[in-house]
Length: 65
Image 1 (cartoon, rainbow, N blue to C red):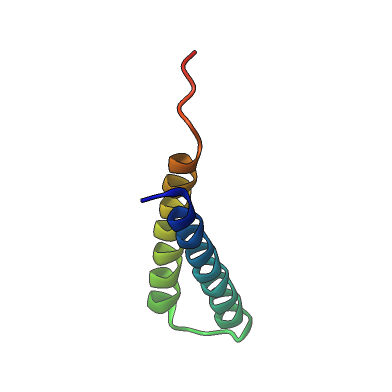
Image 2 (image 1 turned 45 degrees about the horizontal axis):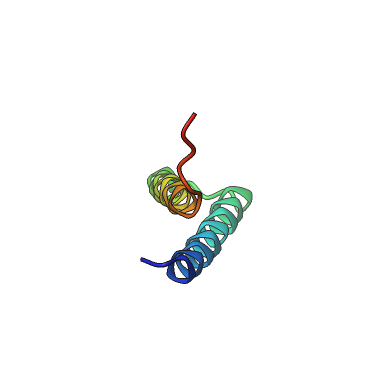
C-alpha cells in the first residue's frame, strides 16, 4: 500500500471509529438495557483503534536508535 492509500484507509477507520463512539453514547444515554450489543460495539471500536494505530505506524518511517 502506498502512502495515499494508507491515508485514505485511516480516514475511513477514524470515521467509523467516531460513528461507533456516537452509537455507544446514544445507546448509553437512552438507557439501553442491551448490554451485549453495547459490549460488541465497544469491542469493534477497540479493533478499529488497533487498526488505526497499525496504519499510523506504517506511515511513520522506522527510526533506528
